[in-house]
Amino acid sequence: MPAWLQIETHAGQTLDNRGWRLTPFAQSLRIRWPFLGGGLVWNRPVSVLAVAPDGQENVLPVTDVTRQIVWTLYGLALLAALVAGLESLRLKRRARLQR
Amino acid sequence: MSDKNDIQIESFDEYSPANANPAGETFENIINGFLSVADVEAVFGAPVKQRDTIIIPAAEVTAVLGFGLGMGSDVGGEDGKKVDSGAGGGGGGSSASRPVAVIISDAQGVRVEPIFDLTKIALAGVTAAAFAFGMLARLRNLRRNYEAIERKLR
Image (cartoon, rainbow over all chains, first blue to last red; front, side, top):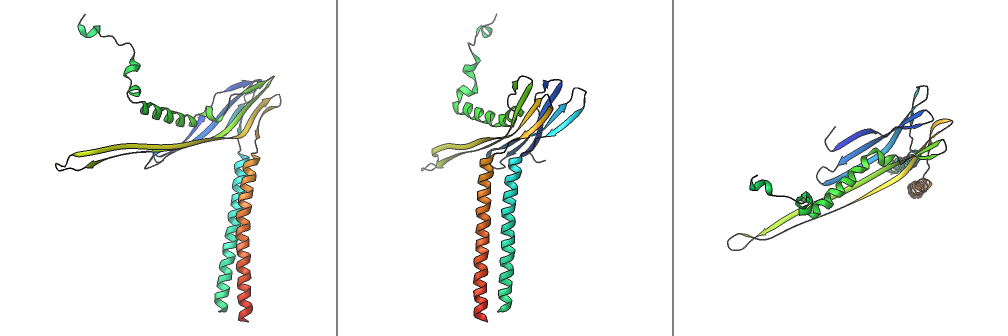
C-alpha cells in the first residue's frame, strides 16, 4: 500500500450487558495529499462482535443503508445518462446513413 | 556542588518550542484534532444505558484538511544582496459526522438497527431525478429534431 494511503481497522472498548460482550469495530481510511499538506480521514463503523453468554460468537455487520440508497440513486441517474447517450449516438448514425 | 547544578528552571513550559512559536502550537492542535477523527471513539458514541438495555450510537465521520506554506525573497540592488523577503501560509478544513446505525443490546439479544437519513436520501433523489430528466428531455428534443429532418428528406 502506498505511504499516502492507510486503511486500518480498530476495535473499540468491549462492553458487557446481561452476559453479552460487545466489541465494536471501525475502519478508517486516511489519505495524505501527495504534494500538499493535510489529507482526508474517513472513519466508519464496520461491525460488532457479539459474544453470547454461552460463548457463541456473532459478527453483526453495520450497514450504512443511507449510503447504499444514495449511491443506487446516483447509479440509476448515470444509467439514464448512458442510455440517453447511446440512443443519441444511434439517432446520429441513422441520420448520417439517410443522408 | 558546582555552579552548573545550582541553576534551577522554574518551568519547562517556558522553554517549549510551542511557546517559542505560537503558530506551531496552533498547527499541532489542528493536526492532532484532525487525526483524532480516525479513532474508534469518534465512530461509536458513549453507550446509553436504560434499565437492562444498552444503546450504542454509530456514526460515519469524515474530515478533510489542507494547507500550504510559501516563502520567497527578492534579490536586487547593486551588490546583489537580498533586499526583501516574506513568508505566508494558509489552510482550511472541515469535518462532518452522520449517524449510521444504533447497536441495541437488550433481553432479546444484540441487534443493529440502521438509521435512514431522509434528508440526504431526498436530496440525492431530487438531484438524480433532475439529472435523469434533463438527459431524457435532451434525448427527446434530439429525436424530434431528427424526425423533422427525416420528414423534410422524404
